[in-house]
Length: 260
Image (cartoon, rainbow, N blue to C red; front, side):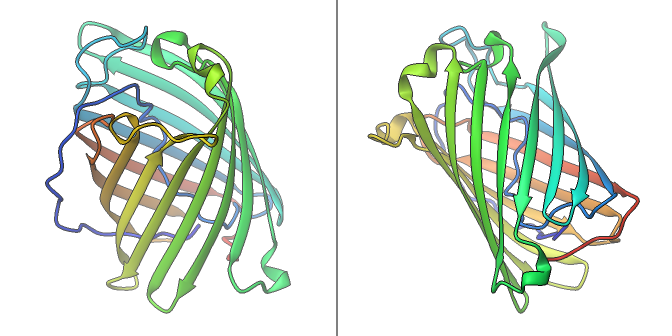
C-alpha cells in the first residue's frame, strides 16, 4: 500500500462540532492488498476538543477515544474485501462496540498500465443509533491517485446514503476527501489531508453545518509489511470537531505488495 506522510505546521482554525464519526479517518489509495495477503490495521482516534452534549440522540464526541479494527484480504489483483469493527470509549460511558461494516473494493490492475490508479469501494453496515444519525448506511467511494516523482495526489469523491435513521431524508450526500504528500526521504512523506461532508447532492448544507477538516500528517514507509500514519486534525467549519489526533498502524501478512 502506498504510504504518504510527515508533519506540516498546525493550522489555527476553530469551529463548533456536530455529529461526527471520527472512526476510520483515511484517504484511500487506489492499490489493493495483493492476492493472498491480509492487511490488519488499527485506527486510533482521539477527539481532543469536540461536541460536549448529546445532539439529536447522538453521543458527545469531546474526549472520545475511537478504536477501529480493519481486516482486509486480497482475493484477486482486481478485488479485495475489508471488514471493520468500530468501538468507542468516553469518561463515564466505558467501552462500547459501535458497529461493523463490510467493504468490497474493485480496482483496475497495474498490468493495464493506466496513467493513474483507479479503484472503487463499496462500504455497507450498521452502527448503533447513539453513535450516529444513520444506523444502516451505504458508501460508494471512487478512488483516483497518481505518483508524480516525489509528489503523491489522491482523491476520493465519496457518496453516502442512509437507509435507517434521522438522516434518511437527506438522500445521497457528498463527502470529498483529498490527500497530497511529498517524499521528504524514501521512508518519510509529508502529507496534508482534507475531509469534507457537504450535505445532499441536491443542495449542499449551509457552510456552518458542513463538516470540513484539514489534517497535517506523517506517513512512514519503514517496510513493505508495515503501515504507519499519524496526524492532527483541525475543524475549519462550525459543524466540525475542533481538534483530533489520529493514528493508523497496519501490518501486512503474506503475499507481496503491488502497485497501480
